[in-house]
Amino acid sequence: MGKTTLAAAIAVALARRGLPVHLTTSDPAAHLAETLPDTVDNLALSRIDPQLETERYRAHVLETKGKDLDAQGRALLEEDLRSPCTEEIAVFQAFSHVIREAGQKFVVMDTAPRAIPCCCSTRRAPTTARSHDKCAPTSISRRR
Image (spheres, rainbow, N blue to C red):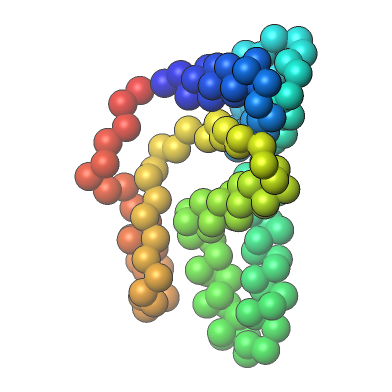
């Protein structure tokens, strides 16, 4: 799709104009470094590890929201945290942290490819084996 190339090109163009830029990626393949020149002044580079961020998020939620739940409530919470949407939330929180830490820098993010678009609702659905249907593929199509 060219997202990595485009993100790198935008970040480099801004940095070469003397603007401070933070370029980050959540792509597990992490090919950003391969698309960049050796060094670019004004450019910081980082990687958000989706798997690590998801585990941190799950642990945090279980520690804070799950601490006073009984066994059944904790099991339901653990089931909810297995939703595909959990990774999206965790990566978004990590990206928000990058933005806060970047201060006055431009922030450019190269996102990971997604096979399944994730659409989460804040409305509480009954938790069953089928409760995560709201995160199933939608009518949005992605061309490859």
